[in-house]
Every structure is written in structure tokens, then in C-alpha cells.
Image 1: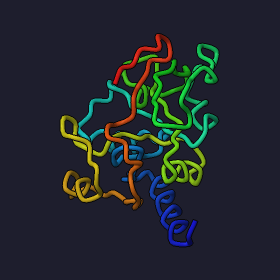
Image 2: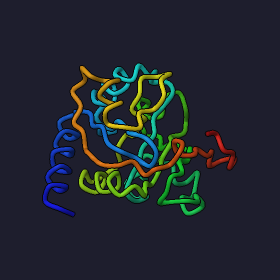
Image 3: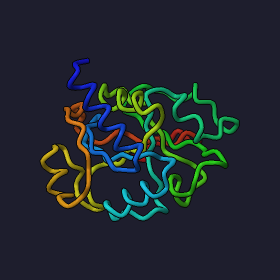
Image 4: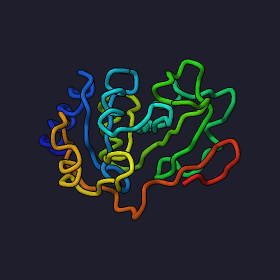
Length: 184
């Protein structure tokens, strides 16, 4: 990784640690992220997207250890989840410690171990899981470019982590871990 890339990652992590919001490329679209343990940051992200808290959010990690603290591992064995690392999001029973601002009105939480190199490096540099939601106001198409993110959120205090999306045609598939049913 170049020194410029390392510097950009450090700046992105600094933004996350101070409770700020970040825009970055993911497998298919640009995402918005924040520290999942910072309620004020999550509230800011939800307000920016005009997304109700009851819907819940997706967490990403660079490996399963980063998302395990949010999961009820007694209720579900992570080894049974196929496609990781990769562009598959699973809805898994949430730990009783997982805050409602992440899981919404559910007893589950959406999680993904990302294979996108930049998203994975971001989680590694941050040292844990991140909230990862598409960069768009609720009801609008997800942003596929940095320019579209800027157009959607021109007044927002976002730090951008430049890079390319993974090239998928659609946002990642979502499966229910309990039933195996594809939800998206």
C-alpha cells in the first residue's frame, strides 16, 4: 500500500474515531459509514439518509472476529455462513448487548465480512466493524460514484476515502441465516 493510501486510511479512521461520517467505495456502490458503538454518529448517519432507526443497519468487518461482539453466537454458528469474505450479507441473531440503534426493531443484525480491498483495509485500520449503508437518501438509487455522493449530500460533513467500487451490478445479496431465504 502506498504512503498516500496509508495517509488516507489514517484520516478516515480519525474521522470515525471523532464520531464523524465517512463515504467510501464498497463491493457495488458507495457506502456511508461510522463507528457502530457511537450512538451520536449513527444518529447523524440516519438523519443524513432520512432512514428510520427501526429498519436497522448493516455492519461490515474485515474478518468475522470484528462482527462477533454484535452477534448471539449461541443462537448461530458463523461457520455455517457461506460466501465470506465476499459480497453476501447475512441477517443473524443479535447479541443482547447490541444496541437498538444498530438492530432497529429486530432481534437480528445484518453483517458482512467484506472482500472489497479498501473496505477491508478500512475495518482493519479502524480495528473493528463499521456501519455500512448505501450512500443515498432513503428512496433514491444508491450512489455508484463519488460525484453522486457529493450531489446527494453536498452540505454534509463527510470525509471521502477515494477508491473504486468492486464492480458488482447490484448491492450485495442479503440472506436470513435462520431460514436461508434470500431477502435481497
